[in-house]
Image 1 (cartoon, rainbow, N blue to C red):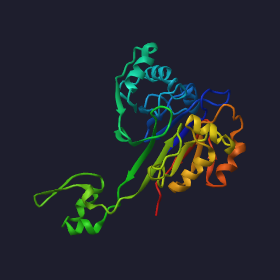
Image 2 (cartoon, rainbow, N blue to C red):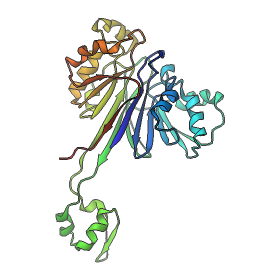
Image 3 (cartoon, rainbow, N blue to C red):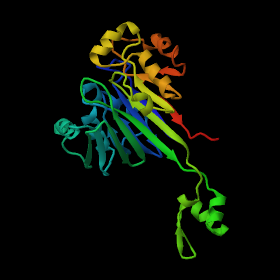
Length: 303
C-alpha cells in the first residue's frame, strides 16, 4: 500500500489557506516528493510525516511556484539528520537550477544525485519507487509522473510440484530464500503465479491535454491533475497559458479509465474551487477538489 498527501493545491501564488504545488507519497516509511512550491516544508510539518526519509524529489518543471520551496526544504532535511544521498529528478537543466538555488543553502550533510530527462518518456527506480515520466505540453519543458507499485503473484503449489521441489522447501521459497535441490538453485519467483494487480498513482500539472495522456494514466487508482480554472469560459485563457480546465481533466480521467480524480493547482483568482466541481463531476463523477494535506491510503486489491 501507499499513502498519498496533496501538500499544496495553489498555482502561481500562495493564499493564506492554500500553499503552492506539491505532492508527497509514502511507501514503507520512505518518501517521494513531486514539486516543491513555496510553503512546502510548512505544510509538510503540519502533515507530520517527517523529512529525513525523503529519498527522491521529482520536478514537473522549473516555474517558481513548483520549485521555489526547495532551498529551505533541503536545509530542513539536513537538520533532520539525513546523511544518505538524495535523488533529484526533472527536465534537462535540473542540476543547474538546483545548484543555483543552493547558493542560499550551500552546506548539506548529504550528497545529491541528479537525473535529467531528455526524452519524451523516461523511467527511474529510486528506493521504494518505480517512476515513469512523460513530457507534457506547457510553455516550458514539463513532465507528468506515474508511480507504479507492482505486486507479485501468489505462491503456486503446482509450479513447485512440477519442479520436483519437496514441501519442506516451499516455506523457504515463500520467504524469498534461494533453495538448492538436486544440484540446482531455485528462487521464489520460479514458483509464483501470474502477477497480481498493483497500484498506480499519476500526477500531472501545468499542461494542455495531450493524445498520449489516456494511455500513460490508464487504469490508475488515483490521478492528480491540474484544474487551473473551473469555468469553461476560461478556455481561451487556459489555451494561451498552456493549462487545463476542470472539464478537460475530467475527460482525460474518463478516457484513461482511472478510479479517482483529484483536481489541483488552482488559480489564485478562483478562491472557491469547489463551486465548479460539477463541471468535472458531470463528466467523471468520482472527482474531488483537492485541499491542502488531503490524504488517501491506496491498498492492493484483494480478489
